[in-house]
Amino acid sequence: MEKKNIDWANIGFGYIKTDKRYVSNFKDGQWDEGTLTEDDKVVISECAGVLQYAQTVFEGLKAYTTEDGKIVCFRPDLNAKRMSDSAKRLEMPSFPEDRFVDAVVETVKANAAYVPPYGSGATLYIRPYMFGSSPVIGVKPAEEYQFRVFATPVGPYFKGGAKPITIKVSDFDRAAPHGTGHIKAGLNYAMSLHAIVTAHEEGYSENMYLDAATRTKVEETGGANFLFVTKDNKLVTPKSNSILPSITRRSLVSVAKEYLGMEVEEREVFFDEVKDFAECGLCGTAAVISPVGKIVDHGNEICFPSGMDEMGPVTKKLYETLTGIQMGRIEAPEGWIKVIG
Ligand SMILES: *Cc1c(COP(=O)(O)O)cnc(C)c1O
Image (tube, rainbow, N blue to C red; front, side, top):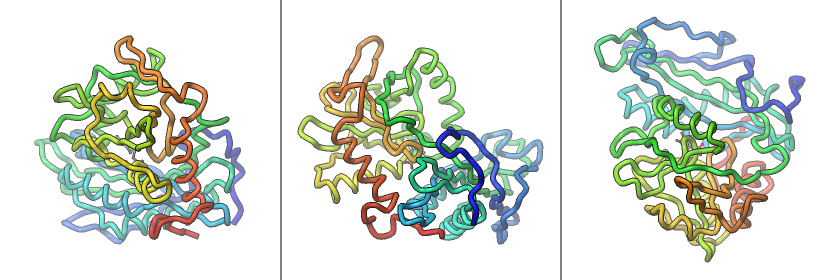
């Protein structure tokens, strides 16, 4: 198969239309058999549930080429499960988890020419999503839904190495207690846009959100979970019912325990303790880990000892081990790597 003529190292993180996408429709209480299509347009009622009341959930994962030339993706079964959980919370039908994984595999296979080569730093980003497609005007769940998967090549997240970022403690809340912070729903992002645009205008890369009820505990950023490293080399990651359960974070916790022999604490993290940590990072599919060098809380700066030039040593080890597992340089735990072709 011939690869597309794309400048992999310089494509950035934007949408590039690929050849095929997967579509399945839910009607009369069931999902149809689903199909790949070249049609990148969605045609739905002007009154569709997604357009009126934001009834939509999504996932994000990557396919990439390993050192030995295989196309793989990372733990898609966990994306399938999470999307099912997200759908239930918004009164949407679950897309069967085995069919979710098959749809991802089919979509990647059909767009294999867009999977960047090993070593390019680029990957094929996969976006499964689902939305209420039938008309809804009185507030209630839609009766019909569409599940789709498209893929788009994305460039290396860090060009020229991962530089630590500066983030701010936000005055906005991301998620209410008992709300929807733990599901991957577009609505959580719509309402975070003002906060992130504001943070960017002020010169910060991201927002640190605190728990909405007490504003004393660390939750997450708009799209990544926190990792902290203590001065005595323990990994600490915040636990809360309103944090999105990041697959990268869960994988890094396993890597820390099983590969690096670290002690890991998944617990409530008070903002007051953050100043005592040695390292801080953000984790998610996009970057795996982004190192945080500085956190600014209304003029008070917390500067981590790892500094603003490079990743802290423990963060770096975690990053290299997980990316090594993903790229086939280090043996993966059973079931983590789904070989596509
Ligand atoms: C998707 C997402 C993450 C990261 O999850 P991964 O599964 O690691 O990609 C973290 N926080 C939020 C709010 C997210 O939507």
